Length: 363
Image (cartoon, rainbow, N blue to C red):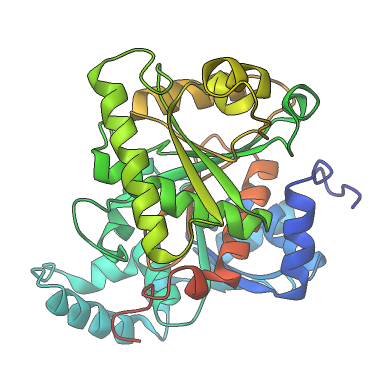
């Protein structure tokens, strides 16, 4: 597809997502709608007939931005949460959900629910939208705090976590494969436990399988490969890989998703390195999913990769929630916002098939 209105052409990852979405359009809510980047993305999605954007914010502000930049607001819905006809209904449902979860009620429910991120969450929970793209004008913590209570399984072994998707064209010629990799946890859990790592591996692989439409290889990354550097961190990663494979077998997914670890990144990518470090007769395509032992390792690796001029980076996509949510950095550009929106909208297409327990508590 050709670029227009300043957007770069779509790539081998985002172009199929757009085409898929055009066959199954979704309603995307942007809680920080008073943003030129959001308006450009919304206009693009409407022009492509791929999504129905919903912008939260002051109508006159959004209209002023659109007029200044000659952006069409046709088929883009604008909602001011504090003046919405659904506000009091959402307040009632929010209080009922808090009681059901055993949480104490906020001092001012109206104030909480009027906050755009909370309002957007309730829209998705109660069927008025399909996915959320947020964070472009907020601190990262404000998004994760608002949605953390909506985890599919709110237990310590299954925390909220973040997935980044990187498209690295240079790796196709060097290692084979499609150059598209899913990285976790790249945003939230500083020192994940064995159970956390296994959970990140399985959930990230499910997303990758849905996005790529093929069986998925997961590498649990370490400075060691199969005991080559005996130290505690490697033992933890090795145990996580074993646990993930055991859980996948119980779910009947072990033919579609394979997990290996602990393994070094070069062996996870290169058949040559894999043959030296693991199996000299093996022929492997690069791993689709990289699970890092710590947030430090994930953040450093992702930022180094993204310094390469040709690399495209999408996310953060929040994992483990009852609905699809993207948490963008404030310095994101419109191309990354568009690609990330395409990811969560596609995730929404089969979300309840991927996560059958991911339903609204009072739907």
